[in-house]
Image 1 (tube, rainbow, N blue to C red):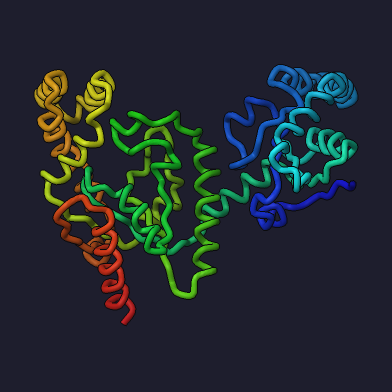
Image 2 (image 1 turned 180 degrees about the vertical axis):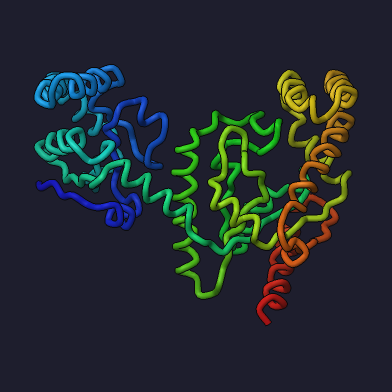
Length: 361
């Protein structure tokens, strides 16, 4: 076997065909990593810190000796870990190895795995190269359609329905692991770091751009209308600025229908979580409305509670919607009787066809 070095473009062109091994420390991996990469740390957090300190304060040679001592004790465990990872891939014994910059850590693990009989690629520039590539993806100009509508309009479900009509969608809230309001973390896993959010987002846009290229007709990427901040993460500024200039397809759904949809969605939520989320917006919601909402929750009257909250969020969304330039030219109102993703998806697509015909003819 031979070790091959590939640049970021060659790595991306592989489209994650091979298992990607991230040999950075656990801390580096947890903060952010290449989506789909598996953690096989050469050094743990403390070892990495010790080696780094020796490199800076003593010499490169001493740091290497410390590293070799740690590496020697981990060789067998690294091989066994990779064996377990590839147990379900008997037909493919090829891996891609990377560290932070494609330096000594990835070279050491690549040598070991090559010696053991695997075919190994080393990513030139390591994770840093992927990170730079990802940032570039998020600075491109994409054809985007924005799916708008007040809270409770079922926009997330509508995105899923649009996929069944061969539309390209990216679910920002799914990537952010947050539904975009004070209640957005209820029932959701922990959010990724900002860097990891951007890594996932860049890959989603890259895949979407491939779909556009493969299509025989012009397609746009459907995104839900969001504030720039989704929970603890932010949509990158250039992408958010682009989103604010794109056509908005606004679902005009009656208040009572949206209220029913919201109550159904949060009906099984823990009361304490609902109350905590309500108190987080107390300053903006107002003392009286906050008290009334909390009382309704305690009384199991979710319709009463979310009736207050929906009115609040409707005002907030309307303010954000109209804080756009040329909104009259971008806004497409779509009257829908109910929160019905399948039917509303058809209405949205028909409206897009009408809008594009008027826009370009």
